[in-house]
Length: 318
Image 1 (cartoon, rainbow, N blue to C red):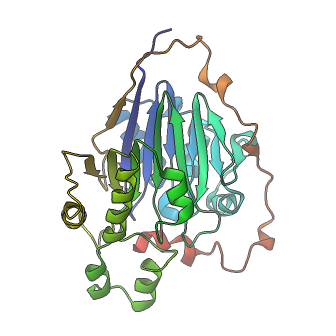
Image 2 (image 1 turned 45 degrees about the vertical axis):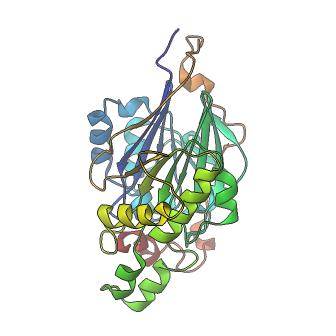
């Protein structure tokens, strides 16, 4: 069966009010994070012409509420497979109000590849104040896309994972001056600007320069702070920095800013050749030999306060 073999990346929502990214590799459909309500996520998918029930898997980055608040209802409604680190599963279970089929839950480990359909996925550790926090590198049809947000800094692990990707969704959370001079209390400023907080525009720009030099040609700026950044500020600061190295957006590479409250214009990567696949249901192709079903966890063993309301709400304040 001949298929429309394109790779499409669509941030549905991005920012401290909620995050969700849709990726399509041919017929494989994947979500990264479900940080808005199930109704909002389903509506956004329908808005871009996608059926929520046809999503083949959900990847969760970490257990802050702006990345998984809609997951409980969404999974129960559509019966989708979910992949997350063991530490993240502890937080996910605290958001659950009703049980869903346990065979849908899969534990993944950093650097241990697994597949959803024809898409090979590499989870990698990210420096954030949530245990088990991950980013994802996805490869299929000769294309590689990486998603890396909630980064206190552009760590060696992140650099290693995303280098060579054709497209990268990378965090540009805050402008340093706006953060320092803004209304946040000092402990929150220190947390956001720390090594396990969020990535500032300047560091994002330096990461883009490095990635461009190593082959990346498409960038999406994501997870912008509503209080300490804006699309205009982020774009101007990053553009000004890159101009020093004679790198011009629109000429040498593409750079867009993910929308906060509605789907962003899709980034489409054309594939050189069309492929023939057997007419097999995609669910039959999902490889979960590495992403093992999770065992339910006794939360009495959780570190005190680790998954308390204060930590789970951190994402909402950035």
